[in-house]
Image 1 (cartoon, rainbow, N blue to C red):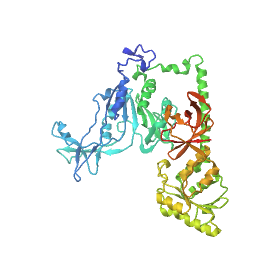
Image 2 (cartoon, rainbow, N blue to C red):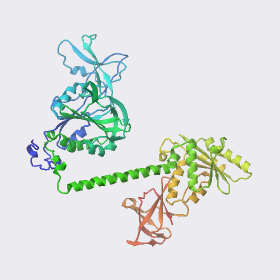
Image 3 (cartoon, one colour):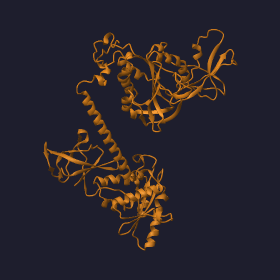
Image 4 (cartoon, one colour):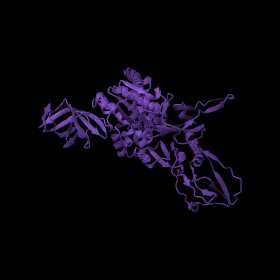
Length: 589
C-alpha cells in the first residue's frame, strides 16, 4: 500500500503541520454543501482539496390569488461532484430569497415540450433542497460504493410534495414526487423531529473520543428509529446500522452506517463545527480510511497492543486507573452537588416561587436568620390575613408575601397595614411591626428585574404607615452577606424591622475615598489611608447593590512593604479582588 505520494514522502511522521504549506493534497477531494464560505476557505488553507456548493435556497412566492407560480432550482453543485471522495452536508433551514421573475430567460428549451416545477397555493416559500437532494442521491450512492464518506449535520426533517406542469400540455398526467430533507441518502431510516441538547454516547467506536470532546456542543433536531432489514422471513436489526449517541429518552440522535464500501456519518447540529470537522478529518477518518488520506496515515496501527513499546502497557494501565479514580471522585462530587442543592433549595425558591412554596421558603430563611418563633398563619387559620407571624421578643412582626410576574400595586403593598392595626387592637398595645415581601418579576433573572420594584409614592406611604417593603432578592443576597461576614444575623434581624424600603447594610465601617489609581487589573489601588490601615483589615466593595469582601494582601508606603499606615498616607494596597472604578469602598475591622 502506498502511504505517501509526491511531495509528502519526506513527512515520516505524517503530521499535517510539517507538510509543505504550498501543496494541496490531491486526496481526499471534499465537497461541502450548505456551508459558510469561511469554513471552506479555512480547510483550503490547511491544504485540503475542497470545494463548496448549495442544495438551493428557499424562494418567497408572491402569487396573485391562487395562481400557480413556475419555480426554479437555484442549487450550486459542481458537475464533477461524482469524482469527490467525501461529501459533507449541512441540513439547514436557510432564509428565503426574493423570487426572480427573469429566470425563464436563462432557460434553453429543446423540442416542443417542457416540464416545469410549480408552486401551488397556499405555499408561501418554495424550498428546492429536498428535490435537489433526490437528484444527487445516485451520485452519493456511487461515491459510497467507491469507498467514499458522507457526513451529515442534521437539521429539521420535512417532506415536500413537488408539483410539475408540462408545456404545452398543462393537463397531462405527471407524477408529483415527494422528497424529504434527507432524500440524498441511499438509505431510509425513520426520522422524527425532536429538539434537545443533552446527549450521551452508547457504543464503543472510534468516534467515542471526538464525541466526548464535543458533547456539550451538540443540539439534536431529529431522532432516528433503529434500521431493520428483512431476512429469513422476518425483520431483524440491520447490522450496518451503528447508533453513536442517544438523548435522555434513549432515542438515537447520531449513527454510522456502513454502506457499500463507504461510510455514512450522521451527527446532530454542533456549535463548534469547524474544530469538530478538523479533528474528524485529521485524526479519525485517516485511521478509518487510510487510502483516502495517503498523506496522513500516521501509522496508527502502531498503537495496537501487539506493537506497544517497552513499559507503555504499564503507563496505559496507570492512565486507566487514574481515569477510574477521577470518575469515581467526579461521581462523589456530583452527589455532593445534588445534596447541596437540596440543602439550600429555599434560596432558589425565594427567586422563583409564589403562594405556599414561597411562604415556606421565607419561613426557612427567617429561622436561619435566628428568629425563634416563626408561624405559618396560612396553615394555622383559614383567614386571608398575614402569611407569617414572627415573635420578635418585644413585639410581633406580621408579614404579607407575594410572588408575581410584574411589580406590586399600591393596594398590595398597603394590605399589611390593615392587618397590623387589627393585631394592635387585639393585643391592646402598639408593638406590632408590618412587612410586605415580594418576589417580583419572577419570570426573569433577578439581576435584570426592577430593583427596587417600589415607586417613590409606595415608599413614602410605607414610611407614613410604619411598615416595611422588602424583596426576596434582597433576602437571597443577604444570605451571602451574612455568610461572608459583611453583616451579622443579629444586625439583619434588627434591620429587617426598618420602615419604608428595607435596606440591609454593614455597620461600623469607614468609607474610603475613591482610589487615585487602579492598577494590575484592579488588584492594586492607590488610596489615601483612613485612620490606621493594616493588613488584618478587610475592604468591603459595594457594586450594583451588592457587597463583596476583599482581603488586604500587601501595603506599600514609599516603595516599602509595611504592616500598617496612619491616616492620610498615600499608599498602594494589594487585594485579592478586582476593584472597578465605579465601586464604593469601605474599611471593616
